[in-house]
Image (cartoon, rainbow, N blue to C red; front, side):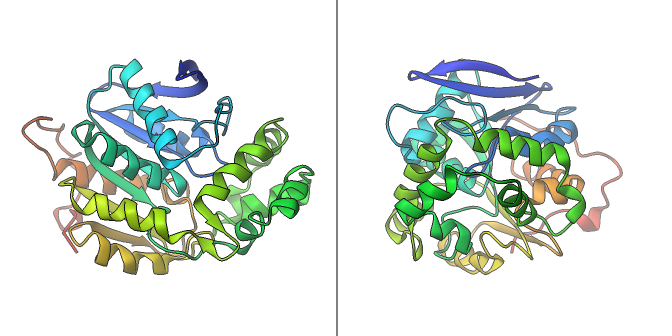
Length: 299
């Protein structure tokens, strides 16, 4: 079940399951905390897992001012504070990955590690459909008229496996697309992050420059067949964050935490188990059936 709280005047929806070290999960643009349902099921036996609908997305209320990287990160920190989450492994997908990095730059003492799944922030290239929305009159017109075909195409573009485009996901996509504030939040958020030519360089450059100064264990995962943020962005990871671990899932799209749920959960738990620190203490031991040869190594 989900719950709600108010942070800085914004009505935010969140979900918390399990007990143990804290994990915070952040979704991508125009998405929702349901993108983390599989990880709740897989991680909550050993961790306290919290997912959040970012301001204006999913079932969270709209912010009073346009979303920025900093305002979204501060909303996440507000949820963490209200729930008594002093320090967490922060996991983000797509836009949520960039927000996770922003959380780390604002409050590094509250971030035990970062897991970035097909994260925004590493490259300019983004799907053409998203770039078209940056043309404000066209974007407003398209978002004001959600159609069954448009919702299907948007969902289909996230996965290699067509089976994941379920009626439930399509119904949820249409419901969120029809929210009164949905189009405005999408356009203003996109407007601050990109334009017709792709993701803006300035905020990416500034964010990664601040990340280099931090000593936070970071794991970057990507789908080989990501149609939203192409896997070529991992080349920038090696340059910008040379100490980060990398993993590419074959035959996988933009949501590896859904499409490769069990492997995703296993890999991140290996990573967390191998990056403990004195302040956070030891993690629970890995399951006995994890082969030694599959434990993570730095790249």
